[in-house]
Length: 212
Image (cartoon, rainbow, N blue to C red):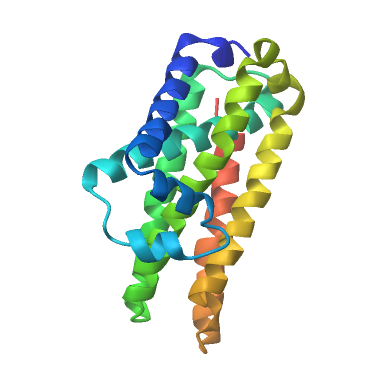
């Protein structure tokens, strides 16, 4: 619990608040379209491949912070303690998971000559992560500071479970939009599901359970 009451934790949330505030100030329409991302494709169609490097860097860092905090709720539940070092390890594991997983996806895309589909998958997937961060930030902020974080002890694990459900609902929507599993090669579908959607997450869960 000490980590969630520390100044470093507060600085992380302030950073996220600045990112979202900047988005509201400079690109309000973009924010509104991002909020609607789960139910329409306007965000992807308008902003696809138009983001600057600095925008990608800061939003990626912000997404990593928010999702690491959510995952840390799970670690807090099973170990009853989260230090700043453990939080850093969570962030590094999630970052490496993302990099390796994207490398596997691109390798499969090259193997089956579906590079354009993979590029669209990558962009929509990253947009999903940004949408998740936007959705969960006010929830995290509230439970972190209401009554000195009493909700972190009581309901943080349910926030994590809700995040998992939310994440996979967005993943299903992504599959439907790109028709990922409609390719008439059964081998491709089996390889994709095993290599990208099952095995990596099992390895990730194992790593998180062993973190100390």
